[in-house]
Length: 330
Figure (tube, helix red, strand yellow):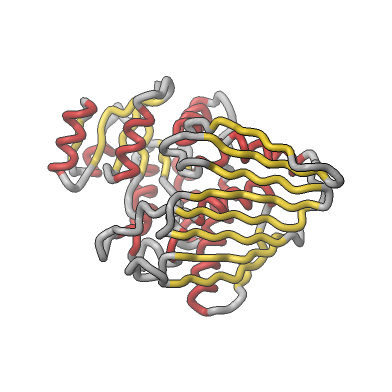
């Protein structure tokens, strides 16, 4: 079992603690949190050592893996420090905010001979894995159009200036919080993206860069795609693929944090829609344990470094397009 340290005990950091408690491959032995009052409460609840000193964690020889659940603008610097300490690093999304930043993080980890993981757990959803299989086996024919929506109002009432909604950490509305998961799935299933046109809008919440983002993309294959992330409406998640031989859609009933059921609808050309209910798995745990298995050599990690960088290149292009109002090459 690999010994892990966690940096950042906010909403998602706490979820990671609860998740790792059910793991047979990772054990959380210590954590870092700048708010020591909050950190001490969590330490008492979960029986782990919590401090405010990041460097102290890096010196701990017991810690083999460091999980970063920290503000996005800190990721590159923290990844570099973890890699230099000879520890494997799992970074919550996004890996960075620019393509060059993501490339530097990948290079640092390779130079240090440590594994780099990223918090894109949607790849482990059974329904999305089923859709990817359909794409790979050509069950849908030529892919024509891909559409994805993700809304969640958990960030809608964040206090003004909260790091999750600042320009420094969230330069394109909900793209870093939610849209980045959709773009990761796009790249995983359909390959590289050539160009993007994006827009943001400020509709309800007082957030620096808007509370809704949409992006239209053209894949290098020629297929088109559309994704949308909305930060002020209740949870909704949809992923749909249209091909020359049929279409398929996945709709989630609840956020992965809570589990639930996904409705998978498949319609073959000339036929009627077939509906299946698929239970969701603990995708966050699946991703973390896949990373642990990659470290120990049991299997290849599901996220390639090339895909990690491509996703951040798309995030950067979305930001540039939303600011300029122009089509941007990725």
